[in-house]
Image 1 (cartoon, helix red, strand yellow):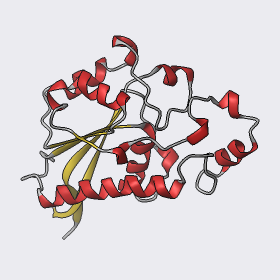
Image 2 (cartoon, one colour):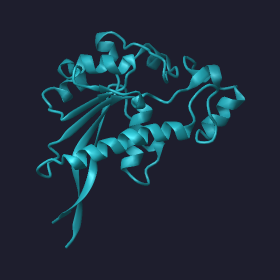
Image 3 (cartoon, helix red, strand yellow):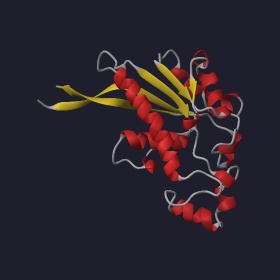
Image 4 (cartoon, one colour):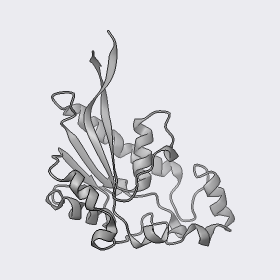
Length: 203
């Protein structure tokens, strides 16, 4: 009998709203940059999309811009969220606060642009370390979903994670074998939904 993919849960990956550094195209990484005020943060659409949706588990990066995003779009969930440093953006070290234009003549930076897996930002995080910490929380979500699957194939169990663009891209590549890191991009204030905890289901 033919099998089709079915999932134990739906993971909603939210990228935080806009900051002044997003607008200025500065590397943010682990820097604790606040959101822009009100409409400038670009969260109105996300607030509508998440409004009234029930989530079985809520996770959030411990950085300010993600905390503020959750508080603005779903203040009722802020108190139950797990604030986890594994959901932080990649640490760009000495390059945080700088732009491409400021760094483009830096030889190490140019080497990193060409090969971010092998080259590490000065004082920053290696690609392997970034990959391993995101994988660890992704696998935690998968295990959570498989321990407590939704009762039908409509993915009634939902996990919400408010995080950063790099984490969203990496999580998507983990869920979709053969998909590269650069194949998925979510704008600030956007959301990506992924099925996790794959299980076999008969037609």
